[in-house]
Length: 316
Image (cartoon, rainbow, N blue to C red; front, side, top):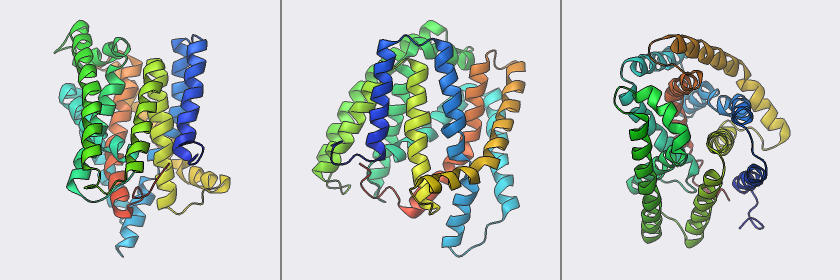
């Protein structure tokens, strides 16, 4: 597969394996992992959601409509404000909402082919849900303290660890079931046998990489490198930037002002969140801040993907 179709996804997975080998040979400290996580979040994680206005502007242009900048940013900030308040008062509900809306977003990026069939959308959501739950529970000993800060009124850390272990088992079984189901109905969603084999291989490689990597690096790889880079590529095509160094540079420069604003807003939100009654750890505060930034981005990005049908092509 890699020798004949060494494209973006294959390159990212190859990079993931190289980093995995390094992790197995060298015992990287948590501080080093968090440093890498911070760098990747600043380089790709936050920037990949900073071009939402231009995506929405182009979607309007294709419908021969003109976007109202004030209305767009007002709605964008309103979504963030409401969701941020919800995190303060109902963190358990907010966490469930975040997982559900992120599930489809992750699934639509991982999916090889996209069409408008309802079955296809259902499978995307289930696959994305399995993936995000797998990322969270695969290293439950590391994630339990972070989750506990959000759900300490409902669960103890030991209960979270036990529940996480059970969810991880369900995810493993779920991956087997959904792959068998996709194989059975592949013609109904316009997949060839080749498409299924590519997707199966992609899933197995992500599974192995995220299992062997320590938690913070596995999260850095899946969200910061895999998901964000593929999302950036979708945005690049949608905004008609060339797939060259110059094209990527132009896109990054275009996103830079919004990246600065997003980082500044994230730091302010995290600071006040850290000082509040809600969160007692900086890392959890940052995660909640990223979740708040993510909500309006998911809405804009998903509409852009559906409108352009960019994923309706082989990506390997």
